[in-house]
Length: 256
Image 1: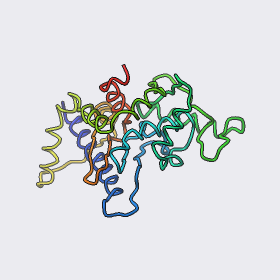
Image 2: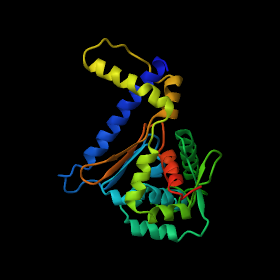
Image 3: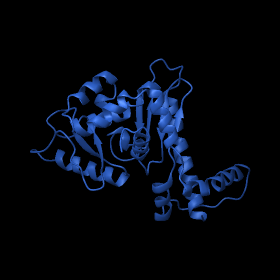
Image 4: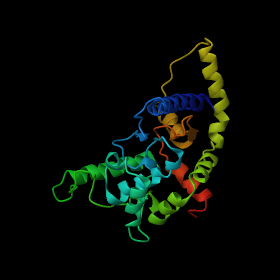
């Protein structure tokens, strides 16, 4: 691996650290009315949590909320800020109400998320297709597009029925950096340490296509348990959390 990959890895590390630091500040244990759930969104509005780059839950037992909120947003059309405070029991009731075999498309990369958002915005601009409820982003289920993965009602229910500790263990086991990332990680960390120690620096354009592609394909996933019993799932804003969830569900045997 060359300088481009190392530069991209450093940029990815810095951005991801900033995101995680921001989310951890929202759940400071001394704050009486701390935020119970939230997300960092790299594209558009807060939609399906599994399509964002980071989520936070004050209680590890609520980790499956990512999938439950994603289902309610994708299938029912609800705006996530309107449902984020619902109890898991209430979310489960919404999912149970869907017919057996119901499924929706879920975006595994940022470009697909952008395409879906453009479709929602276009629908909202027309009198014939705009949402009929103030708390909705669209009418009903989101149309699947080429490249989407499939999220089924039964998958979400099985995830909700999985013990949270087992779900979290599987998320941690799935958050393994790939070979390309591991090949540059040490050099990136050494460069960061040398810079802090006063080594000469230079300005790099980390917005080049090669830098962006490396981050899109290889930025790692972090599963971070917080001291007050919460959990953060995070990656770089050029990625979504769905690949992490997909690997986790497969590892648990929930999907095949």
